[in-house]
Image (spheres, rainbow, N blue to C red):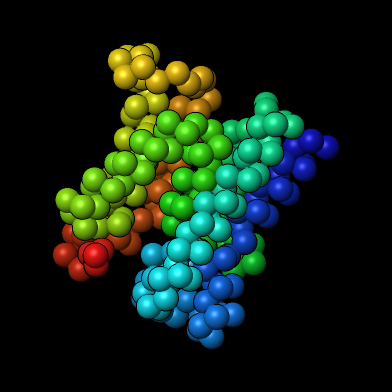
Length: 203
């Protein structure tokens, strides 16, 4: 029964297409027909409405954070299962014929629930890489890779910077799975980068 509750809570929470809902209500457009066709905050920004993009970002973060935080308090043995399901919910939402977003904001929300230190590491890495290369896709992929690598070498890296956090072996596999899935959801961006057609972040 517990695992069924976690499945429903995590997947259904992650599958809520906030970007699509908000743009349809407030901009009267279908975000899937704009820009990259993605339902995430980056594509919502292409509508020209920064407030909708920010709201989408925060809601997409929350739909990763809330189910994982609830699972950690009531079903701690299923926390990594909850994390993966919330992420998959965003990427493959049942409401949109399993065609969702890239999952970066939801991934960040999950990180906040798992480890504040790792979430801040991702944000810092994302900002630095985006300032250097101006590509959101590159920043997201490199950020998730950095989080996984730091977690993998925690015995030396985390102790050397005096971060006190409890990272078990399961989180390594979870974060590695997230990294692979983020690469998968950015496969079109990777192709665009190779063809030099990837759009840069406009600051």
